Amino acid sequence: MHHVNQTSISEFLLLGLSNETEKQNLLYVLFLGMYLVTVVGNGLIILAISLDSYLHTPMYLFLANLSFADISSISTSVPKMLMNIQTKSQSISYESCITQMYFSIVFVVIDNFLLGVMAYDRFVAICHPLNYATIMQPRLCILLTIIPWVLSNIVALTHTLLLLELCFCDNNTLSHFFCDLASLLKLSCSDTMINELVLFIVGLSVITFPFALILFSYICIVRAVLTISSTEGKWKAFSTCASHLTVVLLFYGTIVGVYFFPSSAHPDDRDKIGAVLFTVVTPMMNPFIYSLRNKDIKGTLKKLINSKSSCL
Image (tube, rainbow, N blue to C red; front, side, top):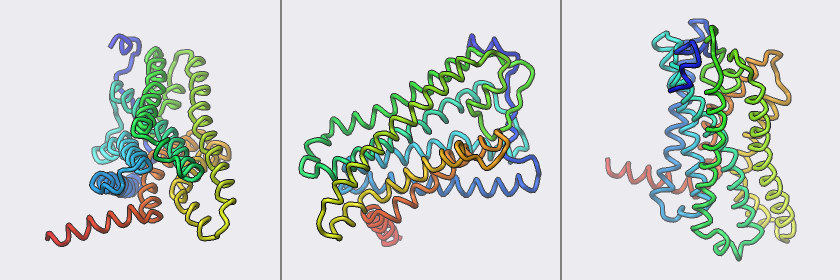
């Protein structure tokens, strides 16, 4: 690429989460376990939704997309980190680093948008139950599925094209376990003011708009549920939102906890903690949240397990 010629380095060094050998081995086992749990858990959710026609509804279409995004999110960073620990190498090529950064942005952003879309779906289901089928038509569902993917790629492409204009001189060491945009900007020897301004504006928009949609949806949902006379009816209505609300609290609670009330005085440590929570912990927790709190998912998974057992 023409832009690669602007930089004097051909690779970056990823320092990872720790340089100590004992901790490296522990991290390898820990992250390998979390990666396998995430892939298997989210894969089972996608499989269950695909095979059970009863789950072919808007809510589960969005959930399948969220599960796919979670698998993809953790796959952008963890396999490379595990390979580096195994081979005792810290290097990643310039092109691979930019590609990794691009897709890490895509899948974190799409999580934001999908959570907003899922909140809107619950709002329609509870506040306008009689018109649900009319409002959530297949065309709208497909549109609400495609738009997050398009927007997330536009966001990632914007940051990537701006980054390609920057120069990287002598220092090629990233104090991270994957190629994070913020870390790359700190490493550049060019003026990054435009990049940081775009990062702030776009980042704020990406968080604010879906969160505003989620907040509006749940305010309307709470108001609608409170008008239900029976306690059983209220509990049934709230239970349909329980899994999604739990994921929302986990996702945005992480943002608040890490970036607004950082536990570490070192920004690099804060960024690493945030990255681990977003790219590893949250994707791993989603299958547990949805499978444990969702009777339909649990029922379908039991059917799959029983059918496999009877075939053996």
